[in-house]
Amino acid sequence: LGNIASAAIMAGSDMRIKENIVPEGTKWKGLNVYAYNYIGDTRPRRGVMAQEVEGIYPDAVVTINGIKHVKYGEI
Image 1 (cartoon, rainbow, N blue to C red):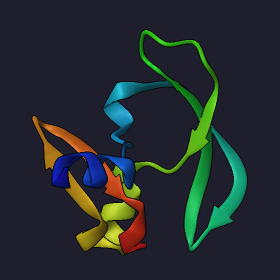
Image 2 (cartoon, one colour):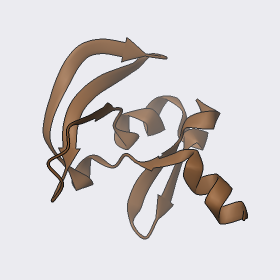
Image 3 (cartoon, helix red, strand yellow):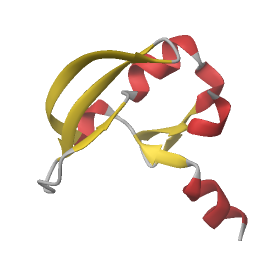
Image 4 (cartoon, rainbow, N blue to C red):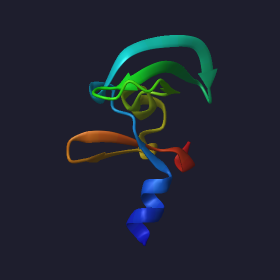
């Protein structure tokens, strides 16, 4: 249950697993917001890049199997 609860508040936000990354020109809690899609998934999404989050909120980023994830509850 703990892993399920953790997964609910984390998102794969590593820029290396995204493509078609376009800055929206807006900010959320001091972070740039981007439009993008995950590689292999054409559904448009929007959010932040873990590498940028890590520079401002280092405790909000964890690495799982080499991929950075954002713990949105820590921002």
